[in-house]
Amino acid sequence: MIKKLKEKVSQRGAALVELIISILIVGLVLTALASTLTYSISVTSAARKQDIATGLAQDGIETIHKLRATAGWSAFYGYFDALELGVAPIQTTFLCIKENPVNTVDPEAVFVEISSTQAALTKEECLKTDESINIDFYQVTTVIVDSSTESVTAQVDVSWDVTDTESKHLLNPVTKIFREID
Image (cartoon, rainbow, N blue to C red; front, side, top):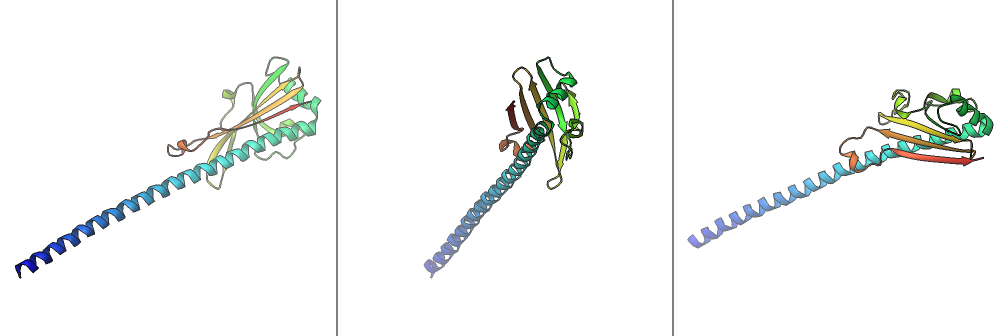
C-alpha cells in the first residue's frame, strides 16, 4: 500500500513538472511570435515610407523633365542662367517644387523656393506631407545646368525622420537622378 501511495505521489510530481515545462515552452513560442510580429510591422512601415519617398523623388524628376521639355532648351537654360547662382558655365541650383505644379511652362509656377545652397532652403517650403501615414517628407531638388556641354542634371533627394527601429531597415534619403544632353 505504501508503495502504491509513493507511486501516486511520484506520478503527480511528474505531471506537475510536465505541466511547468509545457507552460515554459508555450511561453517561449508566444514570445518568439510576438517578437517576429513586431519586427514585421517595423519592416512594413519602413518599406511604406521608402515607397512614398521613391514616388516623391520620381515626381520631382518628372516635373523637372516636363519643365525642360515644355519650356525648351533655351528658355530652360535662360531661366537658370538669369538666377546667377553659380559660376558660368555651370549653374547649380537647389530648389523646392510646389505640391502640385499645374503650369509646367513657367518655372515660377513650379518652384517654391530657390537658393544657391541647400542649407538656405527653409524646411517648411520643401515639406511634402503624406496624409495616409501622417509623415513629413523633405524633398530637395538640385539642378545643374552646364552650358558648355549643354546638359542638365537634376537630382531629387527625399528624406524624413526615422525612428530607431526603422533605421535598421531604411535607405534614407531616396535619391533619383535625371541627366539630359541637348
